[in-house]
Length: 119
Image (cartoon, rainbow, N blue to C red; front, side):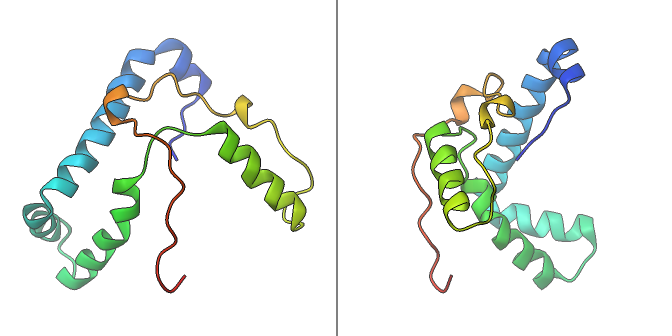
């Protein structure tokens, strides 16, 4: 999830668009060049190489994420949360979601995530 303040959205939409494009492009590049990215990152962070490799593997979900949001899925998720008692009522998620700045080239068709084995 990425969050931006109203003042940035209002006063600097071009900066927001460029930042989002760079954010998604960097994740795409890292994922596509995993074999060179991980050693480079390990050298920059100066941490245990295995710890860095494990952290990067956990980022795979983020790298594969779709920056687009399905309002119907959010509504259904809230309905489930209300049903099981984790949420008191359904909130107007549209008030908090602004998809105008998502770089089109990084949008993917919406699919529900597949559960991982052992979860």
